[in-house]
Image (cartoon, rainbow, N blue to C red):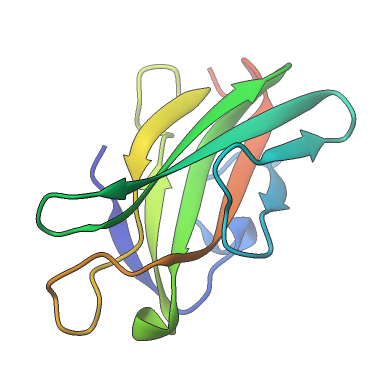
Length: 133
């Protein structure tokens, strides 16, 4: 899925069209390969972080949700080269309206436009699995 570039530092409440029961879960810092985010003791989001070696090079994020939850959107925020911007991956237009795993998510291009900005943090907009179908 291609991302939509968004301004500022949005959270789930800033995205139009998300379900009312959407919860927000943020890494708060740069994601680490193998990091697990706990979802209220009922599930986890496992992260993968890889370095892309082809143009434009930079960090790629993957995630997998274990438990009774799914993502309706993910916001990937870039480092200092892109202060004030992020990439929005909105899954509400998928057939299920949500997703449990994805790969190769990334921040916006750096100011020079020749590489992906390092990921500074990631926000997951999650719902109970099946709640958005």
